[in-house]
Length: 194
Length: 305
Image: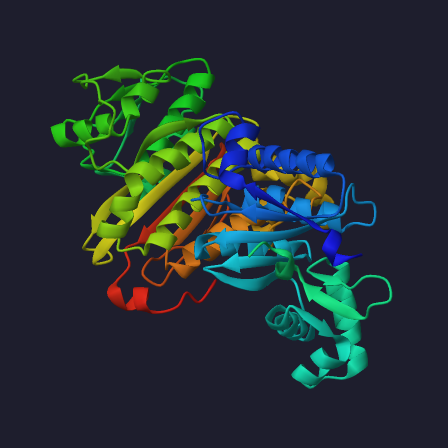
């Protein structure tokens, strides 16, 4: 995939919940609310029709419960990480406070998923990742672009192990592979508008 | 007329004695005599509504003699008890005045019917509007943890919608437990008269256990996060509630059918699992969260016990 072709796309979840469930409630609670929001996001991604980086913006969300997080975040990530995904979408969560982190982390772990998320202004890898994957992701996140050899050197790990870890991270769609012929990887946040 | 006399405290400690006395005369006309009640909390009030409904469903509306203490009647009025009680009891005693909208009282959440996911939204909205100040100033919860209180309420109310196949009630209030704990607490009660944990989990989980009864079903859900659904994302609500309650040094109990399971903190006493209780349909959940002390707020959360 060519990173230049990825279209950034942002979802303000507090607005989406009002549209999706046709109510004034802004708190992201209950499974039906979460499912309605997810369907709204899926519809908008489907309308884009190309590879996209979808920003899930939690800035205006006050309360997020585990059931809603499971429906919105886990099921969304799961669907677009699957081989039969309906579109080529990547996800980054932004505007998370500590009160959002726990529910999102828990539902991701439960489904063995991972997500790049901005928590209290800092980008983190939430959910399921082993220590080597997490170390490799951290190096790439700082550098925004890196070759396997550079990352392996930075964390003092075997090249083959790091290559496998980067491959798993790319499969889980929390980093991007370079285009055809490239051996580089990119952080997802490198694609975000400045 | 069978008389079930309520003790001075209408709360979780004395609830079982009321259930047992009422169960002994099931199917007959009952007078619940609350004359001597001096203290009531959400668990006791919602529990009494549940008992009243069980007996009303038997075909004869039970009578409820109101407390003689005006303060208690006034408090139960503010909690919205009588609005619900009128539908399942014949009320006997000084009729309370209308409770108003509750916005001027310090009630955290009046007794509120939970019949749909929309009701869960209303509960979360109300608690966020009224509760944040109480939780942060009286209970000394950091603001972010006060939000988690809403998450607990949301998850525990959804438990009714998702599993009970019937409506229920929720109520929550703060109290000063000076004698018992030396600080304030929040008491949450969530109850329904639905199918209960045993029936809810039966199809998906009964075959995995050598015996299948109320206690086993409660252990499966409470201890192991098992649920009626095969989706791995399900069943985490109760687990997360336990984790948060434990992190805050609180107490949680769930009664369903003939059993009760609980996480008992060091400041309280009781058995973590009780069996052979008088049968009560549905599930009855009680949560007590103690106020924070400054030293706890400066320490990092440590997760579940």
